[in-house]
Image (cartoon, rainbow, N blue to C red; front, side):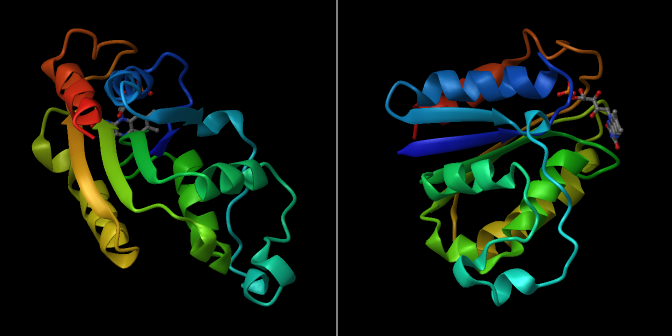
Length: 177
Ligand SMILES: Cc1cc2nc3c(=O)[nH]c(=O)nc-3n(C[C@H](O)[C@H](O)[C@H](O)COP(=O)(O)O)c2cc1C
């Protein structure tokens, strides 16, 4: 499989990045893995004009780096969303990318599987509830197969995820694909 991991933290070397790398290290034993830090791409928010539905090729009128993300998505068999919890949601950078998948162009994607990797400062399990529910609904909407979720609470400072058992779980999730 071609596995595309979209990481949503704007902080380089972040807890999200470390978690995504653990998953990728396991998955790379059998699969091609592309880790894309979405903060490196200038992607505007969807403005809801719906003109992509009428335009030839269903392209968005916005000329930004979402074109590169669409290309990567077209090539992917599996999509992994990796994000810090920001006010109970995914990061804004990642949400922009999700919303830009409103275009019918997504019909050309061949993504069949998905996984979710999250980190949060709080140790309360409910901190992930809203994102997990959104993920479940999106997975259902697109008829993806959910391959698993790794949720790591209680990590706030950069790199504080180091040594956590969930890194091993993320590696094993990737390895098991
Ligand atoms: C804008 C912002 C909003 C945040 N909101 C939450 C939150 O709602 N709940 C929580 O537990 N942590 C919250 N955090 C803390 C981050 O989830 C936490 O620091 C995480 O480790 C950051 O991940 P990163 O190292 O990958 O950037 C927030 C952090 C920021 C910067």
